[in-house]
Length: 183
Image 1 (tube, one colour):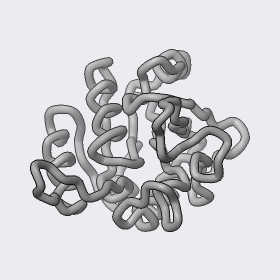
Image 2 (tube, one colour):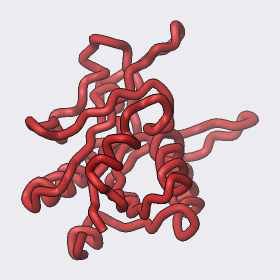
Image 3 (cartoon, rainbow, N blue to C red):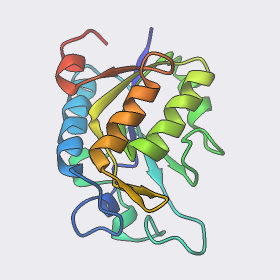
Image 4 (cartoon, one colour):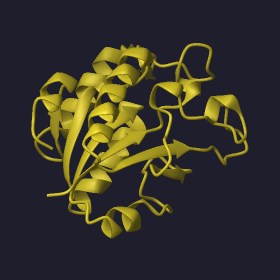
């Protein structure tokens, strides 16, 4: 089973001073960096997913802005694939599936932002496309949400989405646990 690391939307706008700050993005980014270091040291494929907004009313990930750039914690190196997307699902209208097939990838290790949106959409799509998925929960981050006037804490959103994905769509790991397994 050939494995690739997907780092979804680890971009500046999600960090302090960005246009869409998340809860604890630094910790998630640091954990994603640990995963990245492992994949690089073992010569395994890495795919950086970068969301660029195309909607006229978008407020973050605007084209040609610092906020849309991939965060320095996980800066791509030469030879690492960068897939630009415009929708939450990283497979929608991108070359991601074709690239993974061309590399004979059958398993994905997933980290990124936001847990409740782009991570969720991508994991569900990857499962439907037949990939085995290890989602690293503490290498992901999200934000507080609101519904019908009720605020839902970011940690509750994060854990609810991880719980919903676990077992059916993927296996949820911690960074520590994943780093202690064979890829």
